[in-house]
Image 1 (cartoon, rainbow over the protein chains, first blue to last red):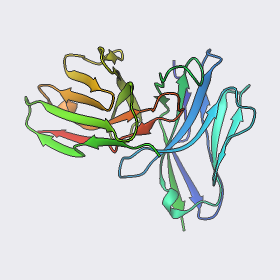
Image 2 (image 1 turned 45 degrees about the horizontal axis):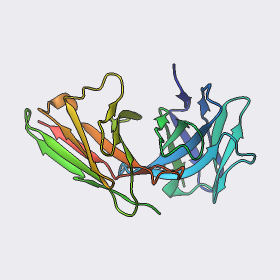
Image 3 (image 1 turned 180 degrees about the vertical axis):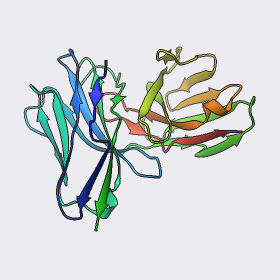
Image 4 (image 1 turned 120 degrees about the vertical axis):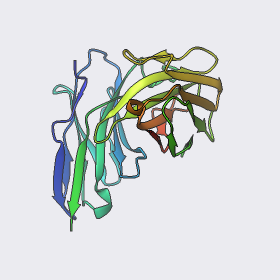
Length: 120
Length: 115
């Protein structure tokens, strides 16, 4: 069964506008973590933001925020004030586990990704 | 932040040869490292979990005799693609975590091309 679903293969946004990249997940584990990574054409994976299943507030990191709706099992990434350098592939990922101090077992399962293109 | 170094970044080899890819955690110890494979325009697929001092755990469908993993120290894991064939051509990327930290840090990846 698909654990992480990203339904948008491609997205376009105008520079300086905000954009939302969708991600839904499926798990029966009450303890899990959700991640977003950016992969530019160079191939490196850049960590953007993390949301724990027990976190009370939505995560924010600079221009990135995560719209976490636990009941709907969605963890959408919001990028505010898009920049040309934001053009890249974006992956949502989930870690199922025993909690924050699980001893380091942090296997991530990735979604199919969304290619974001920022236009001037 | 934590740094994971992966080497080489690109390798071209002849069919039938073996290729070794190294993944090092530069400023932290990693008891667990992960190896992923990514085909063009596709997502990252977990191949195996590399455990320091013990055997790697392979995901379903991944041939452990084809993809040998050695995690000999707390800072180094290696992936050896044995008897490589053109279908093994792919982007391989490793990741590691300092342990209790939630983040996984990734190497820069290795583009393998088998002729």
